[in-house]
Image (cartoon, rainbow, N blue to C red; front, side):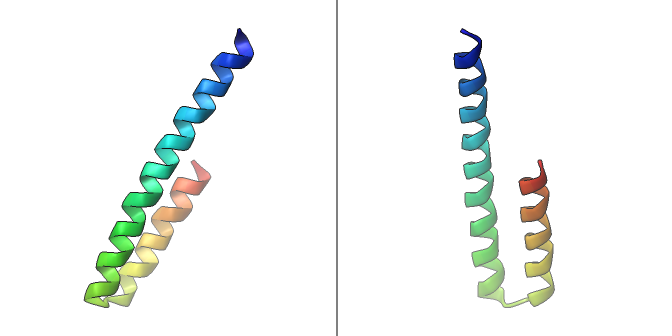
Amino acid sequence: MVDKVVESEINSKDRIAWGAAIVVAGLEYLVLLFSSYPLIYRVLGLVLVFILM
């Protein structure tokens, strides 16, 4: 029982991570469209924050 609970928690965290990755990828795409390079570094910083979480 406990193993299944832990697995479902991990799966929900994976979904949140994927959702965050998709949002960040969309932001990066928009930033590239406007070609303001400093913003790209801020977005990469957000990516690192999500990875560390």
